[in-house]
Length: 390
Image (tube, rainbow, N blue to C red; front, top):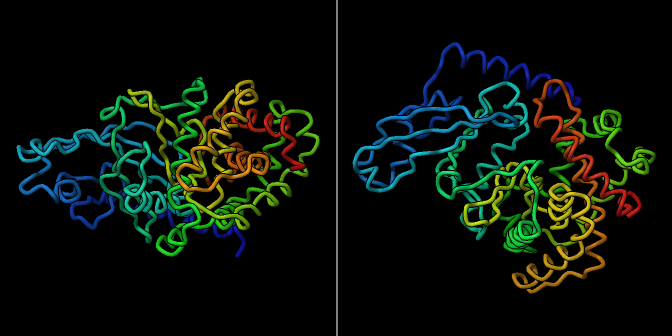
């Protein structure tokens, strides 16, 4: 069965299920239930998932407020408790990520990213000393592809400001981002436990290859070069037919060198800054096992203006290497690391060509101005650093 046929069949199955849910409006009431949408949440269900460790605590009221939509839909829950719940300081503002629609279930459920993110929050987040949201509960239904994560409201708990492609990333912010990535990557670096204990966590080559097949990334990358031609440097545009083969070649480092945890989607829109000026990272659905240079290249090229990236990239890499060495005892060679950085920029681009041009069965994952800004920054870095020939 071809990838397009499998995608179409999945869309039909999911479409039928979502239509049923909108007619029947099933409610989640027991701990094992998976709400089909935030509006299926009840006080009984919230009591089961939030109050289990607080004797006598009960959720007395919940209000659902829409927030935003993309690969997931985000809603805010305003939650009230009885006296026992209030004394325990249980969370009164919670953000949900869920898959209530056909398009969100196609990208988050059918592709398995919602399950991966839930596993990250419940199994790996407690092992990491990084700034990232806490998760109060996560549930995934393999049959219907419904999923929901109840996450810390970072604005309420840490006065966070979420970043976008319009955010100016200062040098101090960039340094903090690099420090977080070094901490993330070092925790399980070259540790066989990452593959043995977390079997749901794919290697980056497998994650990329399966995703590229399901989403026809090679085809849509060619389409995206047409759609974004006006923001791509001429020297990269002229070699467009070489981009995909170079992207495939760049997978080799993830097999030949030790692996660790990588976030895989560290563009600026997935970062936030707390009220204490600390950078944090959210949206963990693309987590995989791979080489750290993948995240470093993506964060630097997609977050910084081209001018700042040119001025800071070597210093940021040197900082990363020092932080990584402090935590692992392994100090990567600078010149080899810079080569890996140049190579992995191609994989940063692949995240945005499929965002700009994709199957009509999939949702629009980002606003077009965001996508074009990312493509412009990343392809400018490819031109500056001769990534295609690296």
